[in-house]
Length: 229
Ligand SMILES: [Mg+2]
Image (cartoon, rainbow, N blue to C red; front, side, top):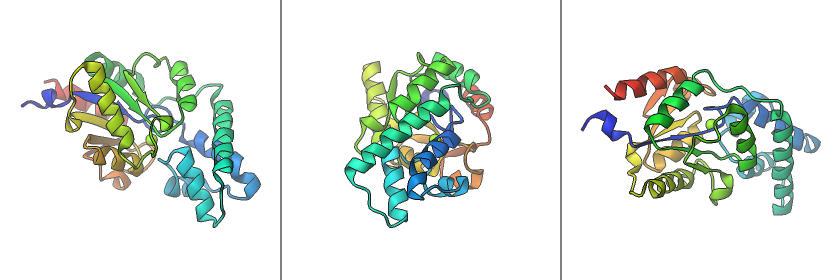
């Protein structure tokens, strides 16, 4: 079997792969927890929290500070962060170099899904800003699963929904996930996908558990182009 035949679909992570939004999630988080004295440095955020959905982010932050957080307070903080994020991204966000070309290439050749631990309200406005609202056959967000990354449920759901849209069963190992964090890589691998990681957020050594690591998105475009030969 040629490698071209083995790639049946591509599943993109969002934050840190398509849009340079992790610093904005960090700012939104700090804005919400600052009154409780839990704001942290960017380095601590990357080390301890990146790749979590908002529920797990706040749970971990309060747990790490030996503070309790009721379910009601958790919901309030998730809502407050979502509002802060919408405010911080309203004027536009930066898409990574190579995204238009890579998305265009993938969209023309493969079924394509988005699998993110962010909220749908975090993602939809930015997809609109970037002109990418039409690209994804299915979008899985934090609201769609009980537990987000590093749990594999979100990737399993993305593959199942893509298969339903195609009218056939997709084999997870024939789907490529494009990720940027250890948490996302763990989720996609546990769901059985082939994982290509891009070193946007972490250095290549920190994401070496992926099947292949790329310094930047244009290298992934080259790799996919090579699959067609
Ligand atoms: Mg990410």
